[in-house]
Image (tube, rainbow, N blue to C red; front, side, top):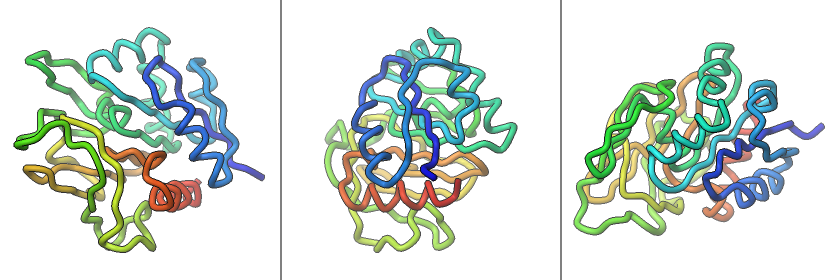
Length: 201
């Protein structure tokens, strides 16, 4: 039976591409702004594009700010993608504006120190040997990034990438998995990562 997932719709882009990518690897996906459905789903996907503070405003607008923390406390799976990963952290700073995040991962989202921003395009990552998300993927596998802000340190199994400086490309910590890159835009590599995640559910 297909895994039942909810993609959280809080008004922040890339919903349908995330839905299609997950369906491609065998999940049954509902896209909804209903916080109760997000709370009860077998697994929850938090996508996101744009600014950290605006995404947090969107999450609050649908009264979903406690959903992720409740799921994590109950050891129930959550996958964050791009800014959907960033808002899982304690706080973000963009254009001098500091905003509180959901606080289920320790860390601060800050502007990348790089000569060219945004970091846009394909890049390799350095995953720990015991990573579940990257199991079976070669070191030269490339994923698609679009971002100007990133986290530089956090707890858990941390995968990194480099653009001007080294930053967190993915994290696995208890029921939380998150990627700074877009698996749904990363072709076969992204599909393999999503399959690895689904296999843990």
